[in-house]
Image 1 (cartoon, one colour):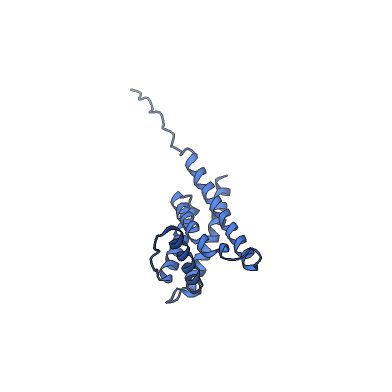
Image 2: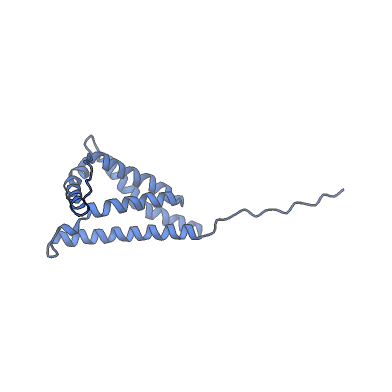
Length: 157
């Protein structure tokens, strides 16, 4: 059963690792195409946050945000493969930050084609988020294995 669990973690983490690898290869000096497409979405998100909460979102260069996302997905995915809760928390943090910014369905009318596409991607992201929460819950609820203590052998004289 441990092998099946390991294979499941590898397949799950592959989604994040492959994405990180692809973004790393396209990164370049300016953050690549993901940084260019992220800028307008981040600006709209920052405007929503500042108008609804009164908090000012700092101006962040997109290449640093993309580099942080690549690092979180890469390190989190590798740690997750080996059953680390820290890896799951990194991936969870990435999903919590990236999903509302990348899949901004709330900026479109329900009748628009973009709304449906972004909403489907957002709900898929929520499914990944739920799976990570499930992993963390299961990982923390299972008792840790402790090695059996061997009884000391009686000495014969």
